[in-house]
Image (cartoon, rainbow, N blue to C red; front, side):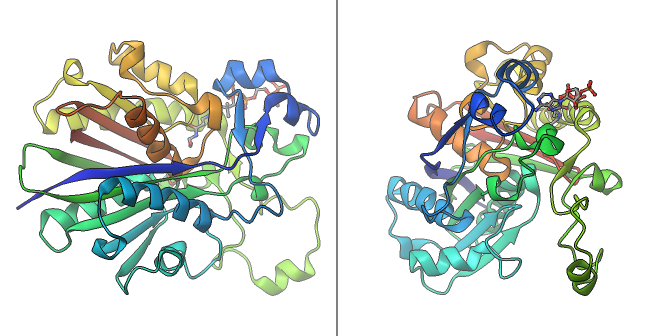
Length: 336
Ligand code: UT7
């Protein structure tokens, strides 16, 4: 048995900064409401014509991660891509990354676990490496939300929260099993699938011919829906549970955490978790203020920024945790 460890991290966000004031010009919202409820000050939106897609942003983040890993792209044995906003309905972006990076014909897997997507992807990669099947796996989380949001006042409860961006990690074999990814913990509760969802297009839900005939402007099933307060209440419970589960599995306590990198869903959720686990400000990394919620990209972007700022050091115990649509949630305990 081996362990896996992160050997390279990278992220990419579009240049276009959209502030809360910018949003208040196109919908009935305001900076005070958004900051008070979410902590978000600004987010990035891809601009029409600049050519960025979920895949191209993922590729840009991946190039940085691969370079930092010191590997050649042809040493990547497998690609895992997590997103809820793929370029195409099918095929998924994994194969597009394989094409764009010009990597030999390795396997490419697409993960559909929304905000928990990166942790699910990390967990799958970790198992492949632990069993010895693969040595180096590229994991990407990338989202292009802005083109799919309802930017009218009707959609303000969702659209002010989400931003575009991508993060990537290279996971490599580690012979020392006391280091690297110690464990991952995954959960789901499909009972609440529709509480945070985008119903159409969905082959099980509506026939394409019905959609074409039904030119109904009131139809919001093409936009993400979120029952915000219900999601919030579930998030704080599940975040806490799954962090505790990870700590207990490794005989650790909250006092052993050097850095918690939570999925950037809402600064108030992160602060609640920080208080619950009695962590100091510098033990929880947040960047939702700058990027909003980038779903599957949020953890790899945050982890990369934390690493770039010297906040992740050799020997540190780093905890990743996420909760989101599905509902799905998960954690990873890493000895850096
Ligand atoms: O990443 C996946 C997981 N996602 C999450 O964990 C998100 C969890 N949920 C949340 O973060 C919060 O529920 C939100 C930030 C989404 C919303 O905050 P809230 O305190 O739950 O607000 P609310 O939806 O209950 O809305 C309160 C009021 C409503 O007005 P009335 O009915 O009280 O008059 C909304 O219409 O705020 C109004 N509102 C807004 N006002 C200004 C909703 N969105 C906005 C907005 N600007 N953007």
